[in-house]
Image 1 (cartoon, rainbow, N blue to C red):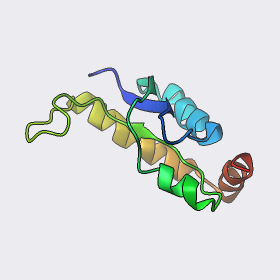
Image 2: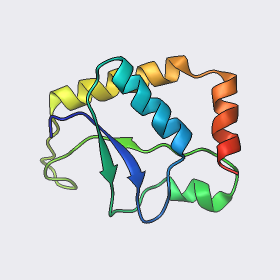
Image 3: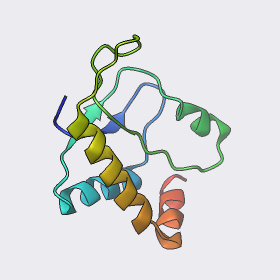
Image 4: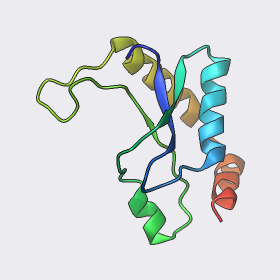
Amino acid sequence: MGKGLLLTYYNPTVLPNRLPLERLKAVCQTANLPCQSYFSYEASDGAWFNKLRTGCPILLASLSVRNKNTASQVVARRDYETALQALARFLTELDEEAIRSFKEENR
């Protein structure tokens, strides 16, 4: 906790698309926002998109959480603020060409 946004490179149910993942990582580096590589051993809801085979790019970004799945979950405020800034920058920099490249990589 406290070391920034988690960028998930693997989980057992889905392999996130590399282009959006690398683009989010670049956004973090450019803005000096801390981020961490993460390899999850838990399933993700993103797997359903893969099963639909619609060509939807998948990006998994999350926060470190203590006491996960309990009534007293804890996150670091710095991680939360970093995630908000990183995702806001990522989304505002998206354009039609980037989205098209994400979909093409998915095929």
